[in-house]
Amino acid sequence: MAERGRPRRFDRTAALRRAMEVFWARGYEGTAMTDLTAAMGIASPSLYAAFGCKEALFREALELYEAGEGGVAARALETEPTARRAVEAMLRDNATAYTAPGKPPGCMIVLASAVGVPASPEIRDYLQESGRQSVVRLKARLDRGIAEGDVPAGADTLAVANFYATVLNGLTIQARNGADCPALHAVVDSAMAGWTALVTPRG
Image (cartoon, rainbow, N blue to C red; front, side):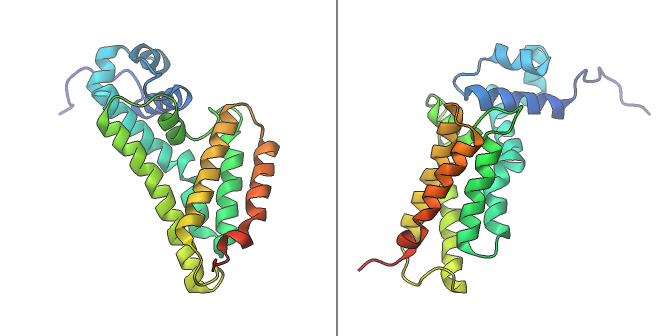
């Protein structure tokens, strides 16, 4: 027997992607519900029925972002054969992604943290934890480099991870301020020029 009821008149996946792009461009606090309903092509009751509140919609949008455009860093760290190549690929791949035509510039997560502090403590915690995890992933890749012999034993992998995470975040800000892809790659050139000094143990 066919299920009764009014069918949804919109594509939920497509609507979520449009919401993601609005949040990406404007940040969590900078996005009004009217911005979302206009971009998604639905009325407020349909939005609430399909996604719940604005916070829940933002969480789903972040998950969609991390599964796609936001997963560039994690993929680079997993696939490259050495720590140095992994870090450089992470920076370069993101430099290219942050300036891709037709998409908001920069990283959605970094920009959501930088463009207004979300009033929701759950959203604040989520964004802060995401930032911490980027350092954790970098440190783990550098530690693996020590184990595999391509990073010197005794390297301060936490300090190196913090440095390159900061460079990555800076690429987002530069992209949002209008820097083009070659300009971001020039920043990566400078950051990678310091690799040997950064991983060489001090003392």
